[in-house]
Length: 367
Image (cartoon, rainbow, N blue to C red; front, side, top):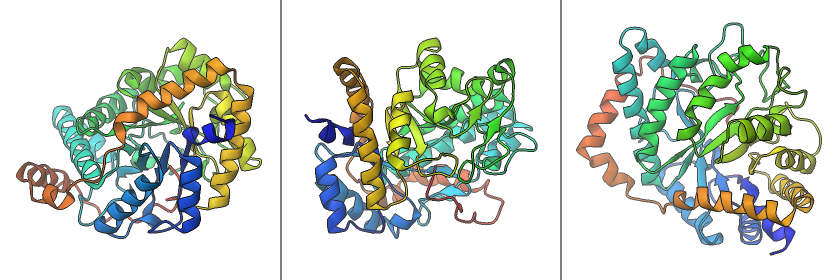
């Protein structure tokens, strides 16, 4: 297989609208991406969504994975007729009164989320958020967090993850090495975290380190953790290889956050190349613009040119082994809505949605 042909297996691409254009069909056929990530712009109703997923699957063989951001609260792509999920912070509030009940409810919420994603044909959820909710930080994380202490996040995000993955959905822990203390939104500019190495180890890094055995994929943060490296984490070999792989022994997938985000600088091919050379296995291009997907593919090919044959084979095998179980065909979503256990769990979850229906995430093109 040529370098150009191999590049697709490192790409999670995106599309523009509710159905595939002829140009997008050709791109998918040619590139054979590892996955396609969907956003609100791609979702109209469940039948349309399943038709879109089937169309994507028809262009990629074996079928590629379908990705979504389904955290709950304001970052929730699937909506009516599916469950209205409270923000993850709701379980942290509940834990102040009853930690056992909060963990149980987080597990049920993850389980219901997994049921719905499996029924619609989505195999990978870019969740849970493992960032802490920190005072004085930019609100981009805020109520997306499962707590403001490492133990809260470990317990509640871990419970939610267990529920999700019990339904055959792959969860992606984000945003490594921790976005909670950032005083800027990485969708717009580059945050810098000033905590010492010891402070990071005791707070931001702890949920990732302790939940890694249950995570087959983690997503990087576009931020600088000064105590760890001067490079943004997505481009930091010291963080992704030295800390995550070598020191912690992580063997799962490392996935970049969306490469087009404002925290990074330079053309998209360069951004993709730097992410892969630092230690990312997969890179996300989330704009929905075909030319951006193509540009990221070019950067991937450049990175592969710098790897040895054994490096390529090892990374390719890690991607194949991890993703292979998570490309399910669309299921019977109407049948799910009629199931009594599902209805009971859904009612339990929605009973905790005390706030108004959450608005669309203004950064819905990113993770």
